[in-house]
Amino acid sequence: MRRNLIAALLIAIGLALMATALPALGLVHLGSSNVAIQPIPALGDPLSPPHQHPKFLPGTGSSGAGPSQIVAYLSIPRLGIKDAPIFDRGVDPSGNMLIARGYSVTHYSSSSPIGSGNAVLYGHDDIEGSVFGRLKDLHIGDEVDVTVAGGSSVAYHVTGRTIVAPTAVQILAPTNDVRLTLFTCWPNWVDTQRVVVTAVPATT
Image 1 (cartoon, rainbow, N blue to C red):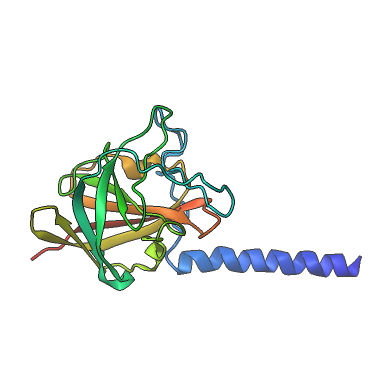
Image 2 (image 1 turned 60 degrees about the horizontal axis):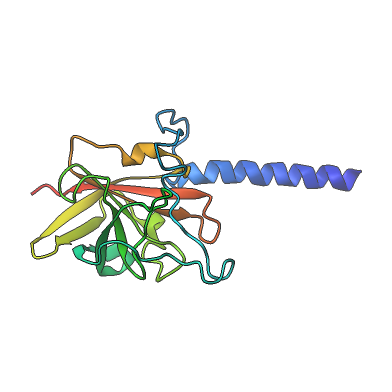
């Protein structure tokens, strides 16, 4: 009985320490009541692309369906990402997001075009090259560069980082300012939440 009580106390202390550590790392914004949790039409979990892990579901990787033209390239110096191709993708007839294959980034075609409004970008965290595997390591002020295919490079600076539920549709909403919203699944190989990073054009 005494052992069970001690074990329960240790678990409670551990959970309390975890709850205080995440906000300190800047990974969780507590008390945020403005994050929408309702699904949007045709998308049950709009932040849940087909993210099947080969080790769990063999042969069920992303289809790579959709346009094959590269619309831009993404570079993030802190993460060692250089010229990762960005592809536009929509949804299939069932409402599942179509994800670009390999070490590439998916631009949600239903969001704003890159460079005008809220352009939403997704990258895998632990499969197919894991382009956004370290997205949570970005800091406020870090540089994110986007080169539009056939155009010049635009530098953005990170302005925010948080963790949300897969149903947090607010990150997909249009904005009056120009921004990038980058997100991926988190924690790695668990994927019950989403890391979200926002970046705006650097001022000269």
